[in-house]
Structures are given as structure tokens and as C-alpha cells.
Length: 310
Image (cartoon, one colour):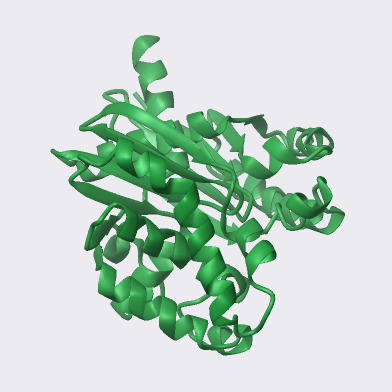
């Protein structure tokens, strides 16, 4: 029997990602195509309460391109979710309607569901035996999920991510010490309570474009190679080193580093700060990196429902 082609799209606050897979009858799958673009859909949402016209247009242009690529593979279905920017913006429905007009079945998921999807994807991808915490850092929200093997114990979604943290705290270029201190203090205040609830976790796992970029920087991976990044380990010292190094540079200087995408150069410090402070708060000296995230979590759910319909 021919495998079913499924397309999974994650319309995030910062990046828009697509995964195309062929799912076989026994539930295993082959990855056909994976792509991610920084579209910064959530820029200025915290400030204005609305998705900006330009941000919507940029994201829709990328989604049009994704649909054209997807159609070449004759997919069974296109499954898409939208996250924090669309949970928050007053005009999200106007944007989502335009997405649906492209033939994409999209729904807005809660922060809790986002955390669950990331957790199950990570559990499957890394097969960790002990209790662990997944930190899924996004553009508009950051999810902390905690569990053992594939049993989720607790999931919390915080309404801060690299877009709104950068807009709120980083005003200078390069940032001042005071700005960096306030940024880290704020993150610490937010996550201290949950770190106590999750303190028996043996391992931290990091997801998102910031932490995979730090892996590329630390291990000199260029061009980007997801196979080299997935499962890599970063120490606290290496994260602290890159935080200090990059915060001493201007945005323009960061853009000149091959591993850092132009748009990411503006927000990478906020992302690294999340992981740096989390490692300090959880008292961990290393973090494992997963390339699997929301799209893979959606895929696992699709596979489950396919099996139950057999």
C-alpha cells in the first residue's frame, strides 16, 4: 500500500516551518522535505494588539510558496497550527481566513497544547530514560514541559519569547549591561516557581531556532545541517560564552556571522538569555538539543489517529 503524504505547518510568532512526510501503514515515516523561514508574524503585537499588515503579507507569501511545494507531492492533507501571535492579536481571524483561502486547514492552539506537542516530539526523538524538561523557546511564547519517557507530568506556557523580549528590553545596539540584566532578571522571576516544581528533572532539552543556531556556532556547522544539530549537547559555559560574545556586537556585526540568519541577529540575545537563565535556575550544566518540535508532535498525533482508524 502506498504511503500517505502529510504536510505539517507551524505558523509561529517568529518563524513559519513546514514538514512533508510519507507515512507508511505501520506508522513509520520518511521525511521528504523540511523548511523554515523567519517571517516575524508577531512583530509589534505586544505593543499594538494587532498583527501588522506587512508581517501578515510576508507570512502569507511564504505560505503560498509552501503550498506550491506541497502540491508537488500530492498530499493527503495539510495540517497547520498557529501559536502565540494568533492567540494574542485582535485581528488574528482576518489573517487565519487568508491562510484558509490558500487551502491550509489551520487552527490556533493553546500554549498548553503547544507544550504537549513539543514534549511528545522530544520524548520520541531523543528517547530519554530519566525525568526531563523541554524548553521550547518561540517568538511570542516559551513552553516548559516536564515528564518521564512519554508521560507528560506538567506543561506551562509563558507569554514571552524572543520577539516581545527584544522589543521590551533591548533598546541599545549593542545592548547595555543594564538592559541585559533586566532581561535576565525578568526571565528568572517568571520561571523560578516552575523550576521548583520540576526540580527532580535530570535533563534539560532545548528546542527552537536560537538554540540550534548556538549549536551551529559552537560546533562550526555551516551550512546548517539538522542531522549534526539534532541530539547535540551544549554546556552552560558555551551558552554563557556566546551570550557574552554576541551581546558585545552590534546587530550588523552579528549579521556578518555566517551561522546567524539576518533577522535572527536582531533577536538571538533574548533567546540565548532564556536558556542561560533556565540552566542557572534549574542548576544544570548542560542541555541537549532536539530538532523535533511542534510539527513532529502534530505528525505523531496524525499517525496515532491513522492507526486508530485502521
